[in-house]
Amino acid sequence: MISTSSILDRPALVAWYHRNRARSRALFGMLADEAYYSQPIALRHPIVFYEGHLPAFSFNTLVKKGLGRPSIDAALERLFARGIDPDAERTLQTAEVRARWPTRDEVRAFAAEADRQVLDALASGDVERPGHPLLDRAEAVFCILEHEAMHQETLLYMWHRLPFEQKHRPTEYAPRVDGPVPAVECIAIPAGRATLGVDRESIPFGWDNERPAYAVDVPAFEIDRHDVTNARFLEFVAAGGYDDFRWWRPEDWRWIENERITHPLFWERAGDRWYWRGMFEQLPLPPSWPVYVSHAEAAAFARWRDARLPTEAEFQRAASGSAPSVVDFSSWDPEPAGSHPAGASAWGVEDLIGNGWEWTSTPFAPFPGFRAMASYPEYSADFFDGEHFVMKGASPATARELLRPTFRNWFRARYPYVYATFRCAR
Ligand SMILES: [Fe+2]
Image (cartoon, rainbow, N blue to C red; front, side, top):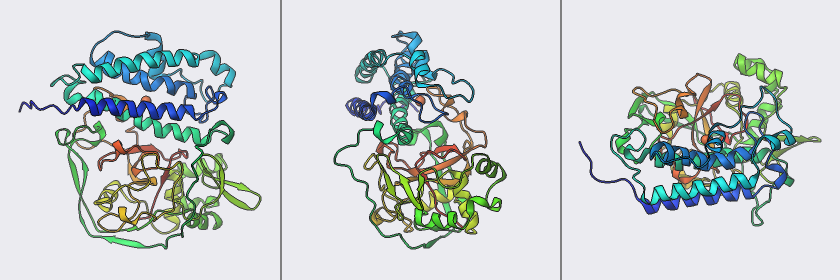
């Protein structure tokens, strides 16, 4: 079937690109100069990489590979596509990083030219070509737009780890910490069907890991109405949960022991009190906020409670009819669990889309019929290794353009930096 109708709304896509770039500028603009060559998370590149990477990825994917136009600066395009391989297990000193990477002016001059050419392509380039590996259904256009939006969340994970004095706090911002701790309540979901994947033709764009259409039957199960809060997780910590191997998978227990982990990364201890490391300040631990933890810690808590994490299919089933709550950069931190009941799903399960990604027990894997996408072939396929688990939903730092039911996120079980929470299923 030949479709003659275009899915390109050029003014909307140009506006989205401008929106993305403005937000990225604001995020980099939040930081003090001395943070620019620092590396707040050892497994990630220094911050300078990302300011170049965002426009470079867009330019490389859409303009160079998609439209076949010439380079701006081949060396920078290569550098910002992948970065400099970090020396194994070694965090560079800021001075070494500064010597290896371009100056900020060089990064910005490259970015300005990349932006100009990407915008020209979006406004008038031949970016939708049926049958073209990158431009069929304008795949590369959506790929670059979602890529930048997703990076903004991962940038915030990094910013979160920076010293407070290296971040400019928006003057009007105050975290919302008030709110009662919701009671633990379990909701029964009857057996039924869950839709996990979608056909390429059914939506303007989805990543390769969301395709093709895929639905499964889900047996009846029960799931918590609310995310596990800090107050609830504190019971696990106080009960010695981090000292008892029985709750942990062997590989997770090794991590707990080797790294001497005794509490969630977002928690800090001062004297005999617990605090939450917020984006801009340390707060007395807000009891009603969803706890942010790694998959390893979430799974251990669930086992301790004689429960388990929901599967991806159970999440999908529980979430049907949900409306977003606490998403799209509306807050720099979470809000009390259960403070947006209007967003509850058809079953009454709250905050499934927002206020923190939700860990599932499902290893990240392709749906039957998966094909890697040409515009970004390594996006998903590099992570089908059994070490990554699917997260669903959204966090306060997830752009609204990414909020679609089939969107999947994934991280390693022991990566503790993400805005991810969980709830128990049975
Ligand atoms: Fe990227």
